[in-house]
Amino acid sequence: MLSHPAHLIAFGFGSGLLRPGPGTFGTLVAFPLFWLLDPRLSASAFAFVLLLLFGVGVWACDRSGRALGIPDHGGMVIDEIVAMLLVLFLIPRTLPWQLAGFLLFRLFDIVKPMPIRHFDRTIKGGFGVMLDDLMAAFYTLLVLALWKVL
Image (cartoon, helix red, strand yellow):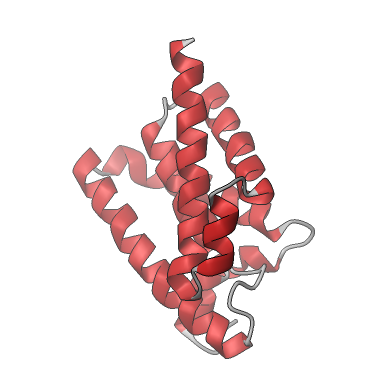
């Protein structure tokens, strides 16, 4: 993990090495990052950081996947971190909403309902790694939006 900065980023600064459930640990990393960044950044600056992190994640996952010979290694969790940051950014900043966002995101990331599963299988490289979690974040936000109006 320390042999290249891309690996450190892709593996969520080590959180992707924790077992069991590296994806869950990676998702949890998003919380302290969000709590640190949210009060310090405007909405547009936070959105820019998310776009930047997505791009860095594509690069890091592509580079690490090629180096490992496993394009979507389970320990690469920058995709979970960025996607969960997006969810936290767009939902109310209360513990019940954040907990619901966490649980729904993990559900959609693990189950991979269609078309997430299709994209996960067909789009390879760093972009594919990041895209399926972005779609899980979208499903999470959709369910939470429906919950809010009902």
